[in-house]
Image (cartoon, rainbow, N blue to C red; front, side, top):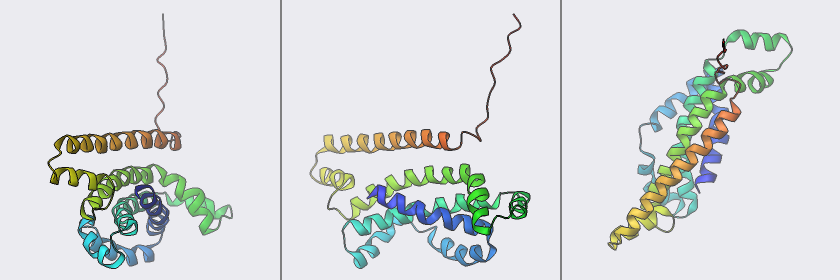
Amino acid sequence: RMAIGFGLALAFSIPLGLLMGRSRATAAFFNPLLMLIYPVPKAALMPIIMLWLGVGDISKTLVIFLGVSLPVIYHSFEGAKAVEEKMLWSGAAMGLSPVQRLLRIVLPAALPEILTGCRTGLVLALITMVTSEMIARQSGAGNILFNALDMGQYDTVFAMIIIVGAMGICLDAAFEVIRRWLVRWSEPQFDMPLSFS
């Protein structure tokens, strides 16, 4: 559920954020909608989504999707907006179409900022997943955690807290390795100090 929700959110949010960063019309259309959704806790939408879609995996995945989408859209938007116009003019002068400029200039230039949003979204995906499983208690870590709490099985409660925390640490560490590899060209390079001995 977490992987599907996170993957769908990236596939939707990154292109939308890039378009919003480079198109005023797109930004003007989507900004009010995003500002309306942003302050609402995504777990608070779970009861409404459950009424529409039931208590199965689809409703939980949708809540994860909503939780991840907003930070990724925001960081993609900021990254695309920060791209220098001269780079786009140079691309246009070389014959690149608007889509090619978006893919070959805007996307690579905005990638460090986009990956920052993805890292934030990954943590939110884990939080939203556990929260949604606490509300729609059928399966998953949140379900095990609350069932154990209801039955007074406190050893299981503490074990699940440790497991969820370890998942968060491992996922964040793995994503940081991937992020550093993808944007290794933008990381500052420190040369070895010269020796005068």
